[in-house]
Every structure is written in C-alpha cells, then in structure tokens.
Length: 602
Image (cartoon, rainbow, N blue to C red; front, side):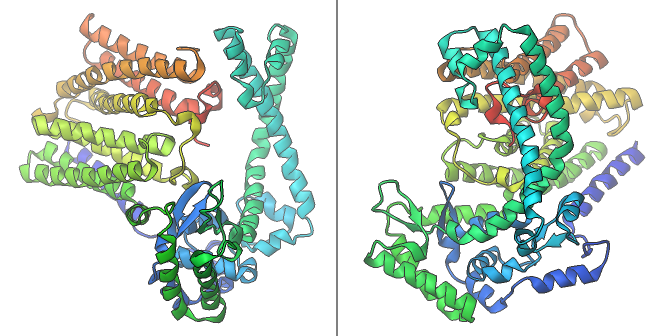
C-alpha cells in the first residue's frame, strides 16, 4: 500500500540526512564548551604555513612507510588517524599537521589530541576529560603500574592464543593425518610437530587444555576492552615521538636493501643530498620561524631530483593515489545507489517511466564511479582488489552492480537493479565504517601472492553477489506473503508476488555453478599451497555447507516442485550460510581457526 511505501521512503531519506549532513558542533562532555575551547587552544596552528603547504607540490612527495610507498597526504592521514582516531585535527590540512608534529614536537606534546576511550584509563592515570596530552601520558607518575596492568592482560591473551593454536593444530592433524608435511604446516603459529604428537593421544591432557582455553577466554574477554584502549593510548603517544623517524622520503639508490632515509640523515653526497638538506631546512624555517615562502621552491627542487631516480613512483601513480584517497569513490557511489534505489522503487510502484530513466542514469553514474574505484585500487596495488575484508566487500558490491547492469540491459524492468542498489549501498557504507588500517592500500600478504587469488576469490564473490540479490527477492517474497501480496510495492505486474520468487530462483541458478567452480579451484589452490585439496578447515567446511544448501534448494525446486514460501525460506537459509562462510569464520571466535586465519579482519 502507498502508506507502507511512503514510510519506507521517509525512513531511507532520514538515514541519508542523518548520515550525510554534519551534526551540530556538540562539544565533548555533553555541551560543556569550556573543554572543547581549551582543547582547541592547545593545538598549534599557523594558517599561512598551512596555506603554503597546501599550495605546494608536497602532495607529490613519497614516503616509504612499512614497505609501501605512500604520498605525503596518505601518509599524513594515516598517522593522524593512528594518533587521534580521526583523519584530521581541528580541520587542518593533514600534511601541515604531520609536518608541524615533526618540527614542533614539544608543542604537540602539550596538545590535547589523545582520546581516552575507556573510563578505567582516567582512573588508573588520574586524568580528566575525554582528550589528554601526550605528555600527560608519558610523564604520568602511574605509568609503570599502568603498563604492568596491560602486560598482565596480554600474558593471558598470549597463553590463550598458544592453547587455541595447539588445539586447532591437533584438530587439523586428526583430519589430515600425521605426515611430516602436515605436522610442519603449523610451525608458522609456533607449534612444533613434537608438541602436537605429545598431546594428540592424551585424552586427559586434551580435556585440561580445553578447560584452560575456556577459562582464559572468559578472563581475556573481561579484560580486553581496557587492555586494547590502554595500549592505544600508549601507542599513540609513542607514534608522535617517533614520527620524524618515519619520514623516509629519500631513496638510497646505492644501498643493497633499497632503503629510504630521512632528509636530515642522508649522507651519500651528490645532488640528492643537497636538495634533501635544503628540503629539510626549508620545512624547518617555514614551520619554526614562520617563513612559508620557502616551501614551494624547496619542494620543486627536491622533486626534480628525486623523480629522476628509478625507484620513485610515476607522477600518474601519485596523482591517482591522491585522488583515490581524497574523493573516497566508495562512499560517493554508495549514496548515488541509494538515490537510484529510491527512484527505481517509485517507478516500480507508480509505473512512471521518467523515474525509471532517472534511476537508470543514477545506476550508470554510480557504477562508473564504482568501477573507477576498483580500477584505481587494481592499478595502485598491482593485484585484484580482493586481498582483505575491505577489498572483498567493495569488490563484491561491484559484482552486485555488474549483475544489475547486465540484467537491466536485458529486460529494463528495474527489478534486479533495485535489489542490487539497496544491497550495494548497505555493503559499501559498512565497508566505510571499517578502521583506516583495514581500508588503506598496503602490500599483499605473501600467502596470497598467487594468480589463484584472482581466480578463486573473484568467482566466490561473484557467486555471493548472485545469492545476495536472490536473498533480497526471497526476503521480499516472505515479507509480502506474511503481510499480504500488495505489501511494499503493491500488486504491480513488474514486481508481482510470483515474480519475486522466480527472480530469486533464476539468480541462484546463475550463482550455483559459479560457486561450484570457485570451491573446486579453491581446492586446487589449497593443494599447491598446503599439499592437500581438502582438510575440513572451518572456511572450507562452511563453503561446502553453503554449496550443499543451495544444491538442496535447487533440487527441491526443480525435482520436487517446491514453490512459494518454503522455497523462499530455503533461499534465505542459503544466504545465511554465505554470511557465516564469509564473515562468521573471520569475526566470530567459535567459527575461527584453521589455515585461513590470514583472512581474518585483523
């Protein structure tokens, strides 16, 4: 009915307004303006120097950070996030903030930039307020007891990991056998073959280990929030003090290990040394002595020489990286998809064709931006963007929209596009909420550096996309079957009750063979990596359960003639298995373990 659709439309519009319009400047402490004003007053600021930095070519300077070559804006954004949990401080340009932290470290040590994220931290260190200074932490009289309390919690976690890894290894050896290759596979986790053999046949010791693991898990879960928050406040203080040591912008082309060094520490001689010292001195003069006019020429001279080295990334690479980070194409495409879904819903309900073309245009624009984001990430990393949870979610969302574009080119009814745009919006917004260290570009892990990554993971995500849209229509069918056939979108022929269940079935027909190939090729990859095709690893087990679930669904519908509610329920159950396979094994401790631990979000 119209009232139901209107309520849905208003709800979606409310979500957009609530998440996109900046909230009023609510001051920390429940409206206490004094704390925010005091905090603002402690933060160093020089607008003229900041403007000179923003107007220079500093955004083309490369920092070699953790084996990855970042441009200065991306490096600065990451470091500010590591220190404050935000990507900006007081609205400042991140480049200016980080450079000021390096050259005016004493001032920033007295700035209230460290968030207090657990109430017990304030009590343990005798601090007040939601933000404290690095000096209040590092010079605190109770810092030693504070660190000892952290260490106690980490000792419990370390022992929990040891026991858990040993039990997981024993479980895998039970499944795979006791060959040397199997036993040695767990040395990466610190488990020796002898440790496994000493315990595997001792039932009493196994019971004791299970009991110890359960006790340690309860203890660690009670301590974890404080320990993690306390570690962050210590780490954030240390990052500020070590920031200058991480400003590795000079490639030492004569070194055998390809290292990069700080400007002040470069001593190889030659033109690069001269411009490096000039670069360092100019930044120091600008920030400490208030001479912003020296920044631009010094940066130009430095880049002219640095770009002549073979190891410096191309200008195209640096510009793509800066634009990728600045524009955040994932979030932009997500909101375009939301508006597209609104117009497509209006078209399906009212059969007003101009709204369809509006939705189709938004679909096309969103998909182009989304595709450019996938392409940029592929170009910048050199591998398919499916190597971690953020990349998997964003690429999965792209495959959703690829299916939607393909279906719209075929029937132009908007049914699949509606479901795909809603799901893509939800998944992209969820990906955007992940911590920055999970979303940033970084080198691929060695275990994933294989052409099988591009094949196996891509096929799995493509099948998940088909199942996700099928889940949308199966859920819509169930809602309408319980609320009435005219619920949500009325009894329009485009989205009739029978059409929703039929579309779910067709999409599962598309996804099932892709999933079958994905699981089979994953087994081939497992044989090349671990020496066995199948080992009943948790990830493998749940992938098989997912395959069986959809096989049963297709069998009951094609052979037994199931239709309607029970068929839709089976389709929904299948997608629940997908979510457990994909997210549950990574996030939920009772599904974790095995050889796929590299796929965990941490």
